[in-house]
View 1: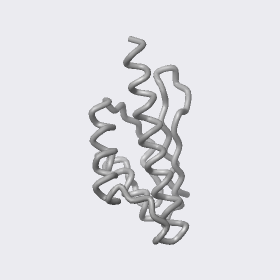
View 2: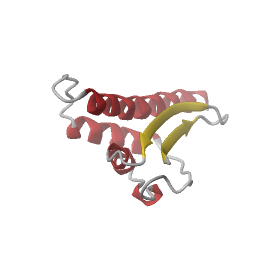
View 3: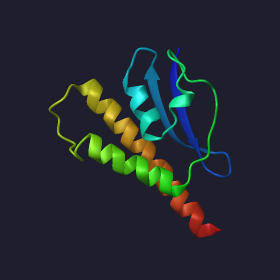
View 4: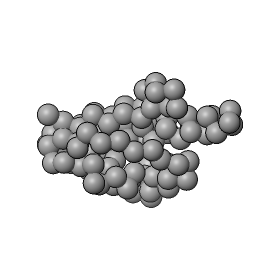
Length: 105
C-alpha cells in the first residue's frame, strides 16, 4: 500500500510521478498543495482523478516555495530532501506540461 500519484498530459501520457509509502506523511503535503485532500484515503489514495488548471498548479508551486522557504539546503535528512524534491518535480513537470499544451491550443 502507498500513494502513487501521477500527472498526465492531454494525450494521456504520464508526465509526473510521486510515490510515498503508506506511512509517509509527506504524501499529505502533496495532496494539500494540490488542494486534493479528499483523494487522501489514509494508507493509500482513493483512486480518484482530477484535472487542474495552470493557475491551480502555479498556486501549488507558490505554496511549496512558501512551505519550504524556497530553500534547497541539505540540512534535513535525505528522506525529507527526497520527498521535497519529488513533490517539487511533480509540480514543476505538471506546470511545464500545462503551459506547453496551452500554447498548442
